[in-house]
Amino acid sequence: MKIKNIVGALSFSVAVTGCSLDVKMYDGVMSEDISSENIAELTYGSYRHMKGSGIINNGFAFREYGSDDVSWTGTSNGSTFKIYDYTRDIATSNTEYAWELGYRAIGNTNLVIELVDALGERASRENIILRGENYYLRALCYFYLVNEFAQPYSNNPQSNPGLPLKLDSNPDVMSLPKSRSTVAEVYDQIVKDLKDAIVDMTLPAGFTPKNNNFATKEAAEALLARVYLYMGDYGSAYTMADNVIKSGRFKLEQGERYAKYAQWLPEDNTETIFAIRHVKEKDSNVGGNMFIRIDGNGYEEISVSDPYLRLLELYLDENDMPIDLRSKYVVKRFVEDGVKDFAVYGHPDKKYERWTFVYSERETKAAGYKYTQLNILKKDGQFVIADDQAGNFQSEYIQSEPYNLGKRYYVLAKDGTKYIGRVEPKVFDAATKHGKMSQYLVYAYNKTSYQEEYKLLYSPVISRLAEMYLIRAEANAEKGEVQLALDDVNIIRRRAGIPEWTIENMQTAEAGEPKDIKKIVEEERRLEFALEGLRRFDVFRKRGTLDRRYPGSHATSAGDRFLEVPYNSPAVCQFIPQAQYDAYPYELEQNP
Image (tube, rainbow, N blue to C red; front, side):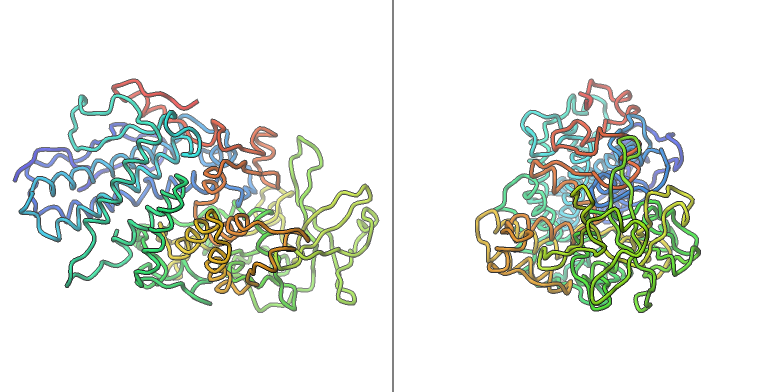
């Protein structure tokens, strides 16, 4: 069989700075003679399109920077900052790369699918498995693209515009979609592709599954579970998640291995279902360069947010340090470690002398939110304010109350205002540590860096087993199966080393009031998947409002406009990049 076509897989070159990207979505290298023997090589090309500056890495800025788990501590105003503060930019290189290279990957998967289809009965079992991998990758691209460039499924999916659905490799202009399919139509195609992927990648006897650097049946089921979750189809989400759990192929990492999750190669990680494999020679700076600085690499300009830390640090040990295993991903830049210290995992065995009670407040509308650090001492088992600010509060003691099976600290101002905060060794402000803004504190994050103990190297995790447990928990919560939901939540909490939920202790956990099972699941998802690109979608898919009333540059750059972002705000999705919009041969409806 011979096909004359445009192949975007074998090689392509792209400018990595500025906006000089070729705007032809399906352009690539011309190949005159492609036979079935090239199917494996072309499939590697599909994976290669997922790396570099494409939908995985550039799309990550959209998926995570717009959450309420992050706080920008600097003064940057580049393209990713406009994603962070929701002001958006119609001509940004970040969204340009995500759109362009996402569609290039789709074009390549289309070709492989067509090649295998054309073989008919002559297609080998290996060919069919490869077709399944391309169905999966096409679904993944469309899933990421529709979430970035269209309104959430929770907001009128039958009428809101989604994406141009290109499902063949024909490069002719006349074959391009003449309009954007609706969000619902795009989701329907994603579901169809993933179902086809599951069928194609269901292995006959004698076949060994590929490792987790490649799409597999379980990877397709895991992604489909998430897709169904976003669609509100909890029964189907449960089935897919349950299938992955019961496959027996994966198990949760524990202890130190979990605390250093990003350090291990994907193929050596028992929890990862699918990851995009990155290597030292080519991908050393694709990890969390905004979250941490390692060996002189990275900016460490985005910290974890105050609301996230308050949820994470409800459980302390006898030395008043957090016990939740997930707190090891947060690297607080303590003053006693020195301004030049950038340890990847901090100094967990060190005893600190200078302690503070930290809370956030808003002084004026123009100034935004800031952190306030009160110096404290421990006296007879209680924390006492040890500086001249003590007179601003009703008591010199830091107050506490039971919350979420842990302890929550607060102070009461003279006017009765309650400030909920945390106790911790004194942390550097961003001005002293990085020359940034003094009202913010530096809380680095190592969860997306340091693979093989090498700088910022990271293989982005697309799906992992913990998500399947919490999808199953959410589905049970929606059905009113409270105990079953708690059982799965507690599997995750047991691994984290924090108190487990029971139906009895739920009754007083919300500051003395009953705790809703749906909120328990939501908060556990937030703790477990911080900075993995899921949080903003968890808020919007449930028709919620993202609350960003906390310290961070978003509160000064955009003022009040995006301190609270409802799920149906135009700002929850990006504009179609202007260059792509202008170059498209048909009129596409632009996002408002």
